[in-house]
Length: 427
RNA sequence: GGAGGAGUGACCGAGCGGUCGAAGGUGGCGGUCUUGAAAACCGCUGUUCCCGUGAGGGGACCGGGGGUUCGAAUCCCUCCUCCUCCGCCA
Image (cartoon, rainbow, N blue to C red; front, side, top):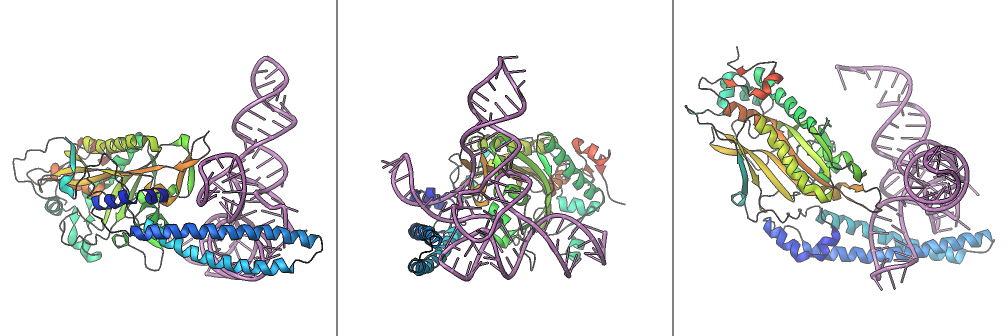
């Protein structure tokens, strides 16, 4: 959410900003102006009346104490009370409308974000590692995994449906090793490990920006105000919803493993084979609560921490700065980490690291206060995948495959696999 | 699921329906005293919104929401959370 004052005073800038995100006209800014003005009018009036009632109440108390008659004032105030009640009802309505407009307004991209309408305008910031030269035609992870007996898509669709997978044997073990490996790495860099609920309420989803606009992307529990987490960003960022943190503690860093559940509405036909796009996948997430002055340094640091995982695993990747048209709803700036997939001969997203500035903090009411300073201010929130575990498994299978279809375990993971160095066909 | 109890400021804790934004205490900050520290004593110590260039003025907030009343932290309803006991249960 943007500051109301900022929107009011920069309405043309907001209009251009929406256009740069391919959202021209998506939010009724004229209605915003009108509602905002009406709200001001009502607030001024209702407060004037309340002030009158407060003074009169004191007067009535004084009269009663002196055993004098107060019926005139009392009847007059009854009338005022009615008017106040009407105005308050109107105010609730205007507030609701105004807020629902504000909740659909995206964040303003940072000035360093490349301008452009789609992913073609994204900027490659750096490319790390060389894609391996294969002496044979590399297979897809789906083929490799199925042949090895560690991935079972057919049975997954029997027990649940499409876009689910069963991971078995050494594959399951590798996935669990990856989770531990990532969490250990991040913990060593000062991220506190947290294991949050895997369901969140609608207030939390609103706080981080999944609601109200992206309800169709979420799985909701029937009969409950609960949603399956689409990312650990939601529960972890909402840890401090409606709290004021002490400024000295910033930045506060968390890492969290959760499964992630996404409806993938609107992506029918995309990545239908394999683990790339699933309704459920594992992810280790990094979340930071930062001081506004240093949040962009923290974004570089967070991105580097996610990259470190790819480096330790020896996976070739590149870092891409998303352009204005490709930027997520709440992000002011975002780097995608893309890992090389030999079977697709392309880089695929494996992490997304964003600075939301005060966009989420304002929705979720997350403030900080410096020791000497009187005023509190909104923190900046950041998060990034460190990494998407399912896609990391994909990358390992494909990048570490051998001609015979077996998989070498990256050196860094061997201790997490009890010394196992390869995956061969399951017995 | 059944039966009880409780939710007040950073924390503890008081609060006959009217001057309560809320006593008292703890903690924190500043000061006096002291070579220094402690103790003692004195003072300060919530959030948020609106109007105003400013000084300042005003509104709201005692778990959330609603109601009664001229007036609610105080009365009523409802929801939520926590605690205790019973039942069920991984």
